[in-house]
Structure formats: structure tokens, C-alpha cells
Image 1: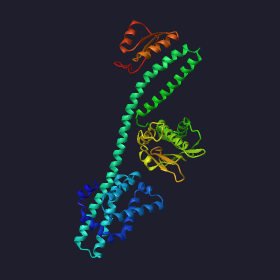
Image 2: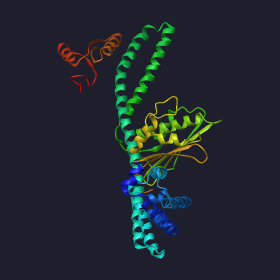
Image 3: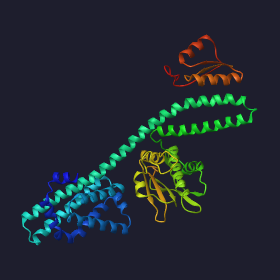
Image 4: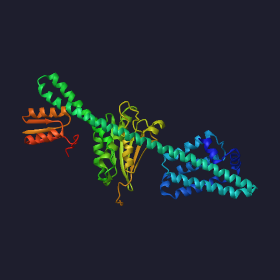
Length: 387
Length: 60
């Protein structure tokens, strides 16, 4: 694809050479271009939040300078564009909106073009060389932009595939669920009739009870399947967070794991679909408990926190398990992806679906002290504003 | 009580009928909506147990 991109943009070897030879001219002013870039980025409050602390901003500025250096160095081969794709994917990961990426690339373009315009006469370049270099740089930045856009497209189609797969699965689950309900009802009622006749035979009675208990288990599995299938939009009502969390944690077995919930004091009722968010919490906590149970010595720990951040309800599930590898992390929210021997791999896919239907995000990071942290943000949870 | 049991799942309808019979009631079991209509025209029932969303007539 990269060869094609170069050809489309008209970025031939001569153009590449022109850009490379411009490096000494522009290099001294990279820092100024970078500063301008982050000043512009900082004008957007949402983007500023991505680079909140100074240390991180400094790191980011450093990597942008490196990026500029590479831009003027090449060689513009397969490996170069592979690396550029990886950088693009990092922007997708931090959820930088595509239109910001687009306008910020333009800030770079304008900045670099200005530098060439200013510096070329001082370096004694001919007008022809200056113009040819500026055109070559434009071509290269067009390619960079195309590569970036491609990473956004990849992300989008991956999400689409995931949604489609979940919808197909939901349909299948609904059909199977309904079809199993009927025979199960026959088993259940026949068992009821049988049980009266075997009361006096302890062994027969014991087995009848076993069948009954297993019928209940089957019924619960079917209920889960049907819940997955019912892909309804959230019905948001003011709901106290305490009871949501309480009922979510209630049913989770957590042998050998200390399970705690810490809710912000005076947390107001949140406008969410209580049933759906209960399921989100239950799935995240149940995953965290499993992660901790198989890990290390002694008692593990899972902590759930709920806080209000302006109109956002932020839920975090922290564990001190092994954390999540990059390979697993990349596929974590895909339906049917699981690392457990037991389990279908629908939990996190459902979490993501519910959260996104609330207009929110779910993300995961590894904690510096070990273990992982799932963070769910649900905007619009406190619409009335105020404290 | 005279009870009419309507369910398109024949086995389930029969089982329900048997359970009601053992409880001392008089069930009539049918497995399609047309049969249910015919039964109600032929006799009076104290109670009708009707499955919803039956094929043909949905019972709602």
C-alpha cells in the first residue's frame, strides 16, 4: 500500500531527496514548531486534558520532535510507513478525534512551510529549489495524512465487525434461548409429576431433585442468553448508585479475594439504566475476581470506586492480579474472546456495548503497582449540573 | 374448577393438564387456538390458561 501511496502523491526519489536535504535548514526550528503545535492543541479543552501533566507534555513534545526529525530523514520505505502507522494507532487509542488529528497535521504543515519560506533565502537557496522543496514536503505530509486516516479507518471497521458479530450472536442466542425454553418446561413439569410418585424411594427422590436443580441452572443460562439478545437502548432514570453496586456485587462468589466498594460521599442519583449498569459492574468485578484468584499468594484484592466528575459518573474496577498483556488488551472487548477455560467471552463485549449506548467509554490500563484498572465513564449522568 | 389449558407445545399442555388433574381440577387440554375457541363454545370454564403468541392467533 505504501508504494501506491507514494506513487499517488507523486513523491518520487527526487522529492524524497529534496525533503532530506532540507533537514539542516528546518531542524533548528523544530522546537518552535512543536511549541506552536501544542499551544494550538491546548486551545481545545478536551485535547488539553489528554496532556494534563507537565511531565507527559514534555514527553509528548519530545516524541513530536523525533517525529519531525524522521520526517526529514526517511528513508521513505515500507518500514518507515509501518512505524508511522503504529504512531497513528496510538492516536486512535487515546481517542483523539479524527478531525483534530486532521487539523493538527495542518498546523505542522503550515509551520514547516513557514520555516522553509523564511530560512531558504538566508541559506542562499534559489527560489526554484525553495518551491520544489515545499511541494515535495506537501506531498510527503499528504502521505502521512493518508497513513493516519488509514489507521482510523482500520479502527472503525474493527468496531463495525465487532458490532455485527455481536448482533448475529444475539440473534442466535435469542433463537436458541426460546427453543430451549419449551423442552425445558416439559422436563420441569414431567419432573414435578414424577416426584410425587418417587417420594418414598430415597434414591429416586435424590435423583429427581438433582434433575430439578440442573433444570434451574439451564433456566438461568437461557435467561442470560436472552438478556444478551435483547439489545435495547438504555432507559435512563435517576438511580442511586449504592444499590446498583450493592446488587451487582451480591451474587459474585469471591473466595480468597477481598472485595470492596468505595463510593464518593454524597454521590447523587445517576441518570443511567440501572439494570444495564448493574450488569456492567457485575461483569467487570467478576472478571477482576477471576484475574486475582489465579494469581500470586495470599488474599487478592478487588476495589470498585464510583465518583462524580462534572456530569460524568466514573466507575473504576481495580485489581492486584497479573495485569493485561498488549496482545490480550487489543482483543479484550471482542465478542467470544476469552482467556478463561470457563466462559463464553461475552462479558466485556456486553460491557462495551452498554457503556457506548450510554454515550460513554470503557478503557483499561495496567496499574504501575501491578494489576489492572478498568475505567468506565458515563457522561450525562448528572444533567442538572451544580454540586 | 373446570380449566381450559391452551399451549401449542402439546407435551407441555398435557403435563399442565395432568398436574391440574392431580390437584383435583377438571382440565381440558388443547394445543391450537381454533380448538380453544371451539372448546369455549361447547362448555363454560372457570379458568383459561392461555399461552401468549400462539401460531395463527396470538392470544393477545
